[in-house]
Length: 239
Length: 239
DNA sequence: CGCTAATTTGAGTGACTTCAAGCACAGTGG
DNA sequence: CCACTGTGCTTGAAGTCACTCAAATTAGCG
Image (cartoon, rainbow over all chains, first blue to last red; front, top):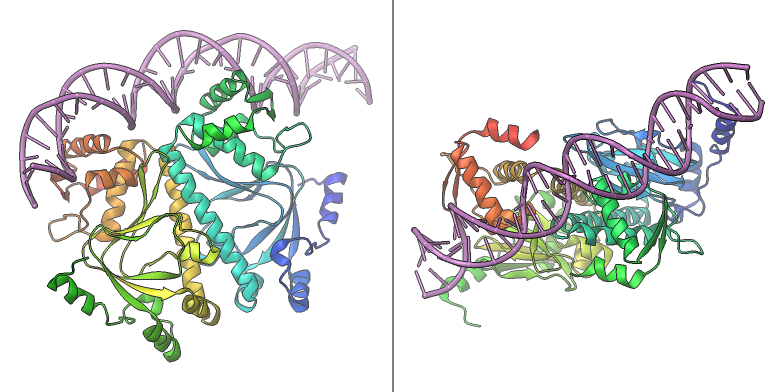
């Protein structure tokens, strides 16, 4: 496969192992830091490329250093359900590793310039077993994920499209923030957004148009600007 | 509150701490066994009584010794979504304990004669920190739960009622088994079953009636007999 | 090279269909 | 006798299909 100059540059950049400013690494001692320095591999992924696919076997975990990773499952008729977006500091692929199962999700670079730190299984296990703080952190991450997944279940089961749309907008705002003009910082296609809340593109578009007409949002293609957050909150949380 | 003779008897039975034949306890050493013997409390719950409610603060975890515990969340309009049924050997209430949050689910005795072993937080933490095998077991349990929750998301989001009904029947069969005559071992109201798959009682009843008419099930009130499992499998897994 | 032309991709709309929820009510058995 | 099961009917929310339009990407070509 051909690698051009820019990609090569990025690949070289990725060789520097950034273990500071990642919360998960803050509890490591000197030896453990060194262990990671020596045994981890930083990897670069172009936008939309696969990091791993459903059904493959993992030999380690990834920690997101930069960019946004989309994690989703593919349903019986090929429809995608987005489970979460992982960003800086998040760990991915740990579940199948711990249970020694095949990957049950697919991960893809959602943004450009995705840099991941790959930790081989033995290193990950070493940290898990010999660093109680690290162990605790992983447990807390799992708990949070479990909780979010449970909430997703009751949301899809019990709320209508309008509510879920308001919810996902606010959740994205909370997770990825807005700029000075209240514009959502993450860009998503309508299809992605629909796949986050268990609906189809057209239906989501209709609800967004409704929100626009009601003065809750301003929409210019992928730019989504929040105009009336209290009202969105109200739609998201009650009926 | 009045306690009759039978209940008292059951309460007394519950004083015996059964730490053997629970998989989670198999990795404990003598000291840890003793720690549990001295510090755990076995509790008895009558059918339909609350074990804990959404919003309360936990001070320990429970391990199911006998009976079936229903774990659910209550949605915005008071509708229940059943997340799982816990049975012998399963651990409940650990999530909120690990994250130090309020309970985000409600647990109730679904069957009669529910006996739980209550482990106070310090004991649980002690085991978690000082017994790697125990730690690993808990992690695996969390992974399994997370996986199941994720699957639930895509099921509710992407499959129709007919498929979900077939799926839940097979899942219940797998988890609770059938007797000599292929009758499902767990008894559920139609409302409970509906709440497992994000639908309402009437809709579920109609699908069950359809399965009955198609010769896949025999239904006599709460007795559900499997007649054509391959066909159910087919309905559950494809379209 | 640069500048259109052509193609692809995503956003958006309208018409139609359908699945399942909602409501009302009848039966039944523990 | 009341909670639970079951049925008929109606309605509506959301999915499906078919299409347009705009923007972005790629291809073609002087």
